[in-house]
Length: 620
Image (cartoon, rainbow, N blue to C red; front, side):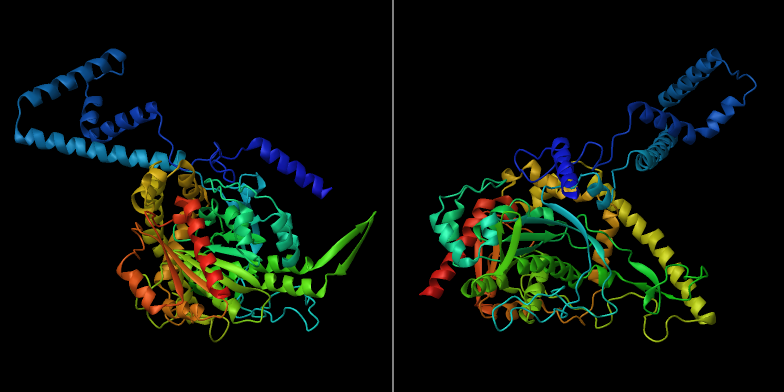
């Protein structure tokens, strides 16, 4: 059966791969894949050196070879080489500035040719691995035990279906929790995400039963990769209602793997039913769509139309749509959609009698309790992901949807006009299209073909002289040095470099083996730089003010005192207290830009202190 097949695959995967000792949910990069450039063999380096000398001294070598006294024998070759070195030594003894300049110039040219030859050979035969997420999934090589990969259609913001519970307290069942009837909705995209589900009792029991059980439970040790050794029951008693889900958005240059150490203990301590974090488009192992396509009306025609003839469409940049923060949030909402469906099915208790199964509604007060827990979610955002967290909270709060934000935690938030300087943007479209989709479905005739050729020329020129050099330089920078991530994290990200572990480095190094990793980062950066002020979510400060005013929503900003990337400690922190009085600021002493990775215990303890204080103040 399919279930047995999946179990056998899981057993085979566990036999073939073992998790790291210091982080039980993280795997090492397989030995068959290479995150960095492999070294060139010694004999090949020798051949490169000899060949470079021969190329630079080809004129002198040609004179020797074509000499009437030269014979193609070993003895004559030895004599020729000896005479050449003797002549060179005599020239060096008779030192002159002219000879010195010639020698320096000769060595310089030899070095340039040797370096270029080495880089070219290394790029062709010894380059780092670049594999698709589909390949990793099919070969059971995903980076984490919690890793998932599936096709997701990002939801258009504002298209949440208005549904929930009916007047009788029953769950309003439907085939889809969201509604999106826009013909121009984003296309499906392969998304990598990590997901952790809490204990079975936390997932299935309504609040009343859950609270009764927690009181009877003995303290349970939480298994955390970083040693989060606080007891779960103690922290659970401090909370009066569990969460349906915790959603987490990562920062720039990172991936969902950054949340891997803190995700399991965070879900357990906040008594959430599950925790989810996905890789934003352009990062991690989420697919990286092409930036440009030729469009004919409302359909992607590619280079040729359905009849095989040259398409009369126009080039359109889609980076602003596919790599935007709105698409990032739409992916998150789509993944939450799945959790909503599972929540609706759990609103009915199942009784078994022998081989017969019957489903009956839960009691009315239990349904009300389940409804409250179902509507409660916590949203976390780190650095660049802070804006995505705010947009997700705002979108859910403005819709009559099943899920409602209860807690928003921003870690080292990179918000323009809040923790960063405001950036002025143009009012034009974020797309760098040669022509838009407005009007007829593609131009025809001379003008249409002219636009097509201009678009083709611009696209080829950009790829040849901008994209390819940038991607190669980025690949050399990141994959040319095996200590790149270690040095970068130690010098810029971690507050205490001594706390940096090999697993911390590995979580950042894993995504660099992804297919088109460099192109995705370039497309994302280009999308952000070309974005306009026409988005309703452009003002980060207004977003934060709107969220802090929501009833029943707690907003927390956590930052490290030694953060070198988003510096909040000091003047910025004081301004935040004045401008956003309902936002609780938490200063993490000695921590850097990624406190939830640097020290899981400290991060969770400080968060729980804030949540406990909020509970006591509200009860008082």
